[in-house]
Length: 154
Image 1 (cartoon, rainbow, N blue to C red):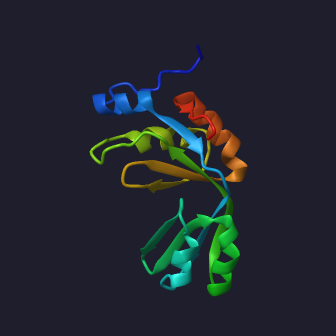
Image 2: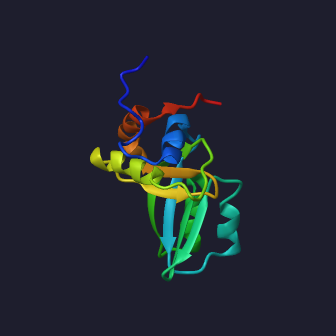
């Protein structure tokens, strides 16, 4: 038995209570990087996303890639005007969630914000993810372990 505080915020909708009660998380193996540049992504940039996890966002005249760290040097060579942030850790929430679920990321990111942990969020179709700079990983894990079980390593 742990001294974990209740996982469910007071007044949470029943669906959120159910998801929070059954959620676990894992740190995805590997190291990641975030790169931003003005150009549209090239075919090589898309290939750099590999099998994932990775993400591409194109908006506001900017391309943002979240990809394996070992791909960053090639992206920077193709786009010398790029800005980047690394090394990052990718955190995956394990239980699938429906699009109608309200409050999951607010609950998680609010807890991390209260601890002073900067982060990025990635929303897949059925799972949410966070990425944090490695220098904040221990703090992030400490917070997340008060909310959820950590999934066993594969």
